Image (tube, rainbow, N blue to C red; front, side, top):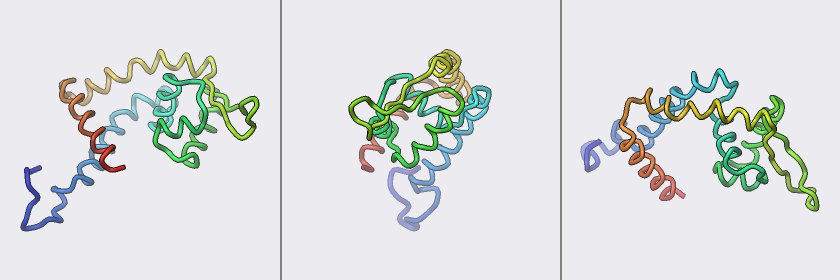
Length: 147
């Protein structure tokens, strides 16, 4: 991308940040797909599991905040992960309106297999780790600016 917008055509597809982000997101998720399939996970389910490996037990509200997903989008993911035995959804004692999400033994054990994913992704992308960290930092800034 050039430093300034193409003044002759400010709507040039190749100049749009949204286009680059969209194509990059599809490509990166595509890199994850064959790594997640043997684990029986989709990419959105993997993101849920990452949050749970770090924060379980956690309320649905907090998990929704961590993943930046609305509860309506998160609920079907949790139901599917519960159906395969990776987590339990339980009412919090003393607050029947609040659901607590807890990993099962199978969900915790899956973490060992998932440890292979980050290095495999780095290898498949073929980019130096420093560039990936810089990209992550830039995307984190974009996320914050877009809020």
